[in-house]
Image 1 (cartoon, helix red, strand yellow):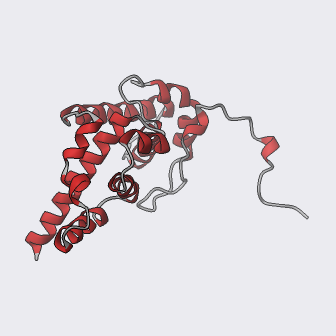
Image 2 (tube, rainbow, N blue to C red):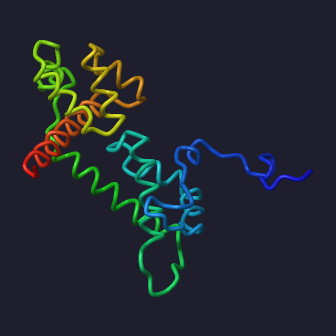
Image 3 (cartoon, rainbow, N blue to C red):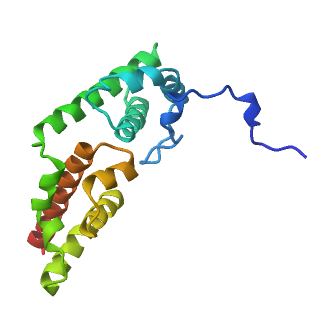
Length: 195
């Protein structure tokens, strides 16, 4: 009885750097990813993980950017074949990381304790039905992970406790939660203007 799956013992052992991301062979738009860029990502995993690591601390965001770089490099229109996929991929990844860090610097950083002042954290007590409906609409306009973090916050969990569960820093979570709140409010505003 033979199996089509390759036995695990034939694969070289992965280092911690190689295992911090996984690239799906088909991107979100349904395009097949060029395997040379997937291989390049695994070969350059240590460099990708180290690039500006002192400024972009969250490995989950870094892994998403590796995936985005592989997809972008694979989809890019090239007149000639890429001679050095590792270098091409790294340049694409570096551009994405640089853009991300620039955007994060534009966001006003506040201490995690200052999140208490944001409307969702303080105003979702079941005092009024209208306020509760507004809070539910805001939460449902968020991505699932951001919604989960805000639901924990509303229940009384500290920012640091939630950050530990997500394995990120409290400052990173604070920034993410503020951004999620602003994006959800913007989406709701656009929806109400469209009606």
